[in-house]
Image (cartoon, rainbow, N blue to C red; front, side, top):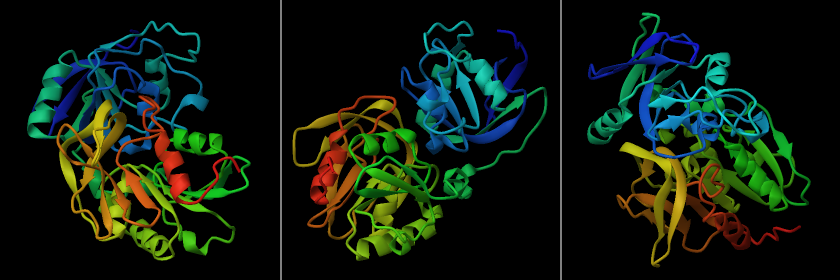
Length: 354
């Protein structure tokens, strides 16, 4: 590793861990969270749901396969504030390498530390809950800042309408911090996708569309009141709606439900989501720190988490309104729940092949 500068991860409770810097030599603050996936760091680092967070990867070896072309990312840049790993590999081997992880982080101005005892750090976050922290490099101090007090969705959403695909029928995708694979999956299934800013009043769009998808995204769902109010209008007009991750929480809030902050969240590629009323359990990719509390009137719980019994999705008793807390598009992770898209299209009366 060329960069041998020492940095520190300082948690709000005073815990300090030293490590070797292999990213940008800058100091930042954020919410310290952990993710347990064994692979997929390029997708994770570019997932807008991680905006404002210092990400701790629990898998011990990170960087093994370098960084691929931008077309394989989940957004057009790194979204995390900082990265913590146990062992950084600066000599990757993979046929699709464009650059090393360290080079990528440095070029995008993201600090990263190799902190050997990420197990201790993860156990602390599981026991005490996620907490504010900061990475300080070159003895350059910075203040603690809580990203959940910001409208992070506004920072990651598109600023204009962008379309993808050539399908005859159009799906409007409300961009609250969308992962690109959601768009890819909708296009593969035969639809034209119109990605619109998070604060768009979909009911006033000047072009015809068949359904709405509310995307994933970062932060506290109660911070996007404009989106919640706009979704109320969508539901009132009976427009078929599917929410994903943050979209699950937004749909719940728009229809009279509640949300709350989880102790340490769900950030992994093997979260067990059980379909309510069945014996079916699906392995899912998840990345969220908030969850749905009260189920809205007229809805029922669609899925729940087998680990902690928290809500993993809601579905209306009669109308084509539904949402899931997990990521049916995966990227990375298991593709067990890609059928969610097809189920939604069926309930919405859409022919996915036209």
